[in-house]
Length: 205
Image (cartoon, rainbow, N blue to C red):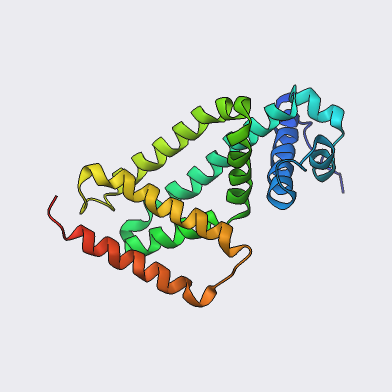
């Protein structure tokens, strides 16, 4: 039986594969050991690559962190859009959206992105470089939410604040639950949020 040889990957395909390995390893490292301990050696070890291979793709560790932030937001946005597009088929679209947002904030990727955000508070260069990425990401998230009509029952000027109110609540919850798990009240918290939003939706604009 003749063995069929696989076509050789192009240089661009090899580069893309290497960058993906590095991004995945950076997310895993930051999510597990934190931003400061995610050194070039730690990341490359997880990626199964040499430091030289990393520096052929990125001039500095900061460049890799910025690319990881961009890729991480892109992955979250893809998942968010996919969920939002299916909301019309759900009996309780708001409940589905809230549960997705809560689960997303507890993901390994979100933990890694939060670590990067925390580092940016005291690293001006990191903050300068990821700020436009975050701005574009959240802008598209809100625009996608508007297209679903999920918050049409609320005054137009309140829809974006409602999104960020819930986002910040679930983000903080994900951090606290890491050291103080309270699964017995998590469903009650979700019901309370839904009840409060339902009450607010009945108010005149």
